Image (tube, rainbow, N blue to C red; front, side, top):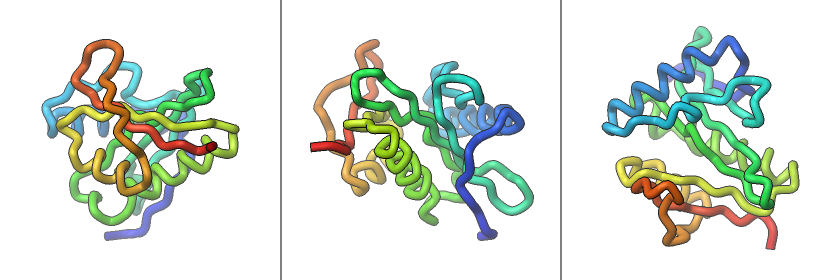
Amino acid sequence: MSSFWVRPATAADARAVRDLARRVGREFRVAPRRREYGAAPGSDDLAWVVEAGRGKIVGSCALRDAEDGSWELHSLNLEPDWRGFGLGRSLVEHALRVARGAGALSVVCLAPPEFAEARTLLERLGFRDTGRTHASGEAALEVVFTLAS
């Protein structure tokens, strides 16, 4: 594995992030929601990428303010060959630090059942299953990380 770093996503990353989301969606046979192909700079979302080697985007995630004190973590995607090296953990921990710094009370993530590895990662990081499903009726399960008590 070559070196990598987590950095804010830029407009120049948009296509690579969308392509990554599509590849991961195909891998798990889940169609990503169009809005979650990756946050574009200037939107209300904050987004980060994992850049490896010579500028290759191998991971991404984003946060959006839900305006009720909670923030939503979404678009967590990693290339298969880059899983298991702590990159997902780095992305999520970075997002949690940013949310905490912005005054969020909690961070919520909707995880389709197909994303078992992601759910396991989130649970290891302290996210807890709320027992709720997505309001749209999708089969996504909700997990929450409480930042303030």
